[in-house]
Image (cartoon, rainbow, N blue to C red; front, side, top):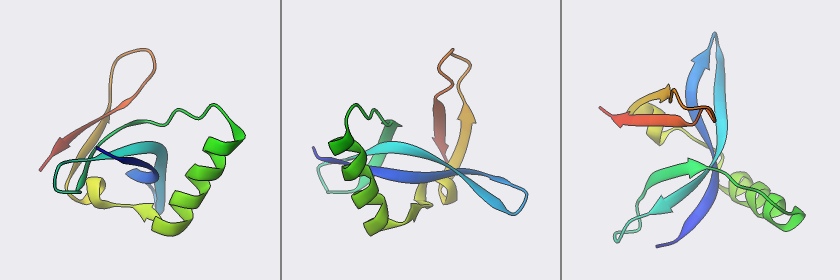
Length: 83
C-alpha cells in the first residue's frame, strides 16, 4: 500500500470548491480509494504535500462518486459514502 497527499474537493460553497488536505491510500490495484485527514509534522512533509498537489491538481473523484458529510466527532473529519 502506498499513499500520497491530495487536495480533495468535499463540497461546493456557492460557485467555489471547498477542499480539504488529505492523505490518499491505494488498494492492491493501485487505485486511490480511501483517505484520512492529512497529518503534516515537518517542512519536508509540507513540501511533499505541495509537490503531490501541484502534480495532481484538485482531486474531484470522491466528490463526483459519492457524498461527504462531517462526522459528529470532535475533530470534524469527513465521512464519505459512495453513490
